[in-house]
Image 1 (cartoon, helix red, strand yellow):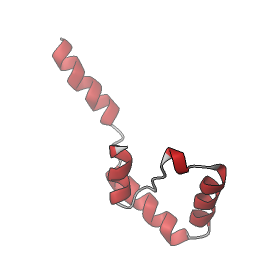
Image 2 (cartoon, helix red, strand yellow):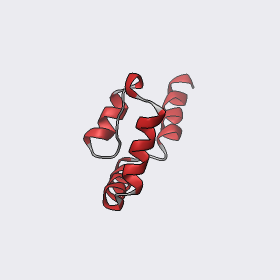
Image 3 (cartoon, helix red, strand yellow):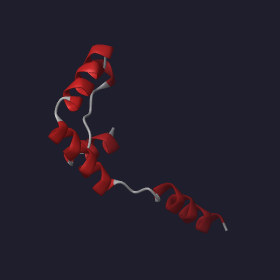
Amino acid sequence: MDNARYFESHQAAVVVKNSDLTVEKASELIRDFLNNDPALTTLCENMKTLARPEASKQMLEEISNYID
């Protein structure tokens, strides 16, 4: 949940507790974003600035350094 909250705090995600997640809630959130292009654009742009596409590779390289 910490990762989700991190992204949420940077306006790059919307966090919904599992206990609050229903089909209706998910549909509402999706509809809201599809009907609000500026909000969706902001979410996408913020996620791009936080994304680390090479993170898995870097993590495996670091682990490999300890194993070798």
